[in-house]
Length: 139
Image (cartoon, rainbow, N blue to C red; front, top):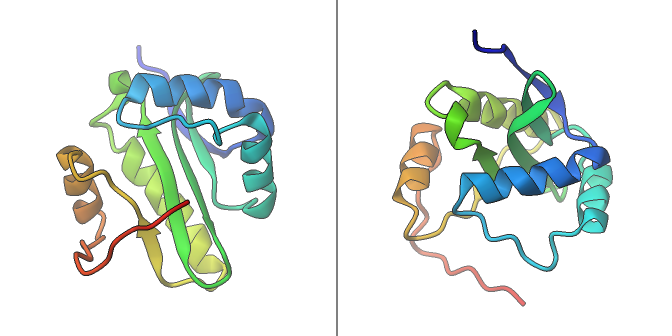
């Protein structure tokens, strides 16, 4: 019997399981800046828009999301391969977007790797549109 899946706000204690989820999900680059401390700081800055999907006590999906007061951003949305094709990703995205909208933010962005065609199709199905007139610069 499959365990029911429920969504819950992410907590600082979810960090270790979150890293394991990202590793299992693939297509997420875990960088030296993805530390427990930066995760905790991000959750404190964005307390209402980061969610985990749980089957029992296992973290099987997650979305990091937040805003800067002007634009919203979704980061590192992932679902464990064993739980895909069940609508979990859409639930995570909808709750994160709903909470960002509740904060008065209407424009939300997501960065997607050029080679990740599955993710591109998913985000288009969620209503996001490619803005091909931009380049992403970072330091």
